[in-house]
Length: 138
Image (cartoon, rainbow, N blue to C red):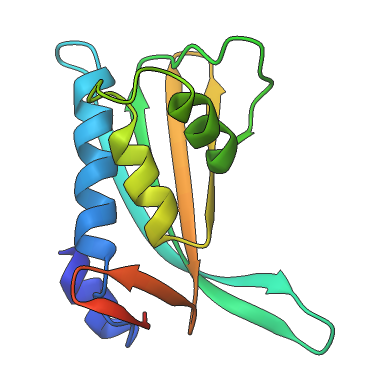
């Protein structure tokens, strides 16, 4: 379904398989039994530059369950969470997925609202990112 959507909007799959898999796996692991996980992708006008806006692909994963963001006020930039997890035990499997997602996208954030956690990431169209085959435009 994700690849079909990417094809429809003429966006190379690139690293999206890994990004979506990591985010959905995290959401499933964090959700309570019988909880819900929702995946949404859309095109956004993106960020403004001096001369124009740079379009971006946005992926949002929402799950039932609240992420404890101790000492941080949502929305929390993904890079901040990655930096915080880097200071923890590097041998722990927790947090590696977010490091991968951060490396493969242009940015992201985590928001907690009531009993849901929403993780949104984006990739500016035409951005040069790393993916399993090497460096290339995605």
